[in-house]
Image 1 (cartoon, one colour):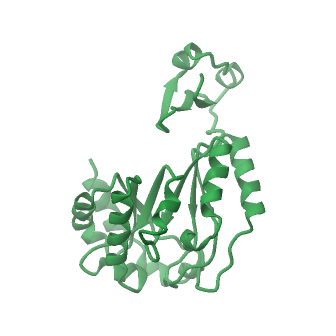
Image 2 (cartoon, one colour; image 1 turned 180 degrees about the vertical axis):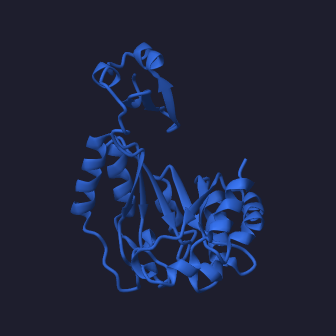
Length: 251
């Protein structure tokens, strides 16, 4: 088990390999690796997972823009979360058996201790990832993100799709940030928020993501929280027929 972080589950176990790949293994395989899961495996079920695989931790409510649908209510005048509080959160996540901590905001780039938080996560056996808007990322500060296993950049569409979600067109800034991270050898992905206004552009966005050379694109729902906690949410979220069409389009 040297170099592995594992968590017993009713089906067997989750195991994170030294290259940070997370895999599910059977009880038989877990036993072969020397894991004693009898307390979980022999208990009458069913049992929910013991902890999340990944937890999102907002490090700041500060952001240079004020998107109308921001579920964190972030703004240029928002406050950073105190480092001591964030470290306590990392301690808790490590103790409960989480594997990955996804730092977000607000705009995490504005937090002065972000690199140290990535190091603190790794010291506790957690794999740190982070999501940025791309605003403010430069060749000078891109090196701050080498401690992260992956950096995802928020990018909500091409041909005007970004503006329909965020209220401003930050697509070019997102493209530049992705190129900076990619060229620096840092693993990069895209976070893409789906709404009724931009879902029809998903195919074009996927093609754009491939051209940018990202590792993955995560599809996120529009959340009814923060500034999106209003009746307008009902007009901006995916309509039922759009959700059905999206499900049918997935392999």
